[in-house]
Length: 163
Image (tube, rainbow, N blue to C red; front, side):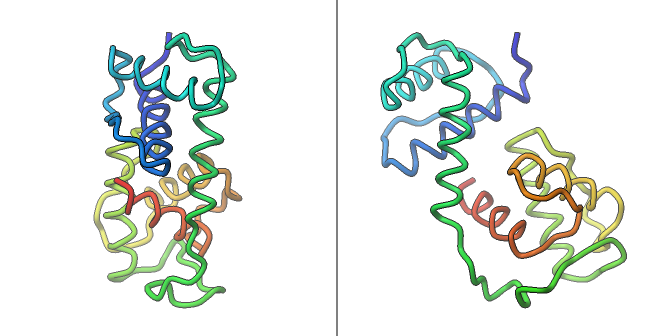
């Protein structure tokens, strides 16, 4: 049986795909595989020309996750004025408002996705913040460094904007 983290990840992926394709159907990442999620899975399966069962097999899971990643890639913003420059990185030991902003964004993403740890708002790039960034990087298939670089910021900000 699926745990709530995986169900929430599936629901969020489908939510992003529906939003990108301007579908009117809504799905909320609550971690419960109920009738609404089953209906959303059937719609996704139909969109992807998969057998329409309402159940998640490997092909359906791959379609949801790959579709989600494709949306993120297609909406990636290469130059964000809030991010200082292309070579800039935040890492353990840094502090200030930018770190606080990152911690707040990570808290919100963790609340919705439920599959990354939520750092406390300390305004310091501490170990929990590094672990949260590393978990996020792993989930979105970026190099896992624990440092916040431009690529991590771009995907994090896009996800936050879609919440």
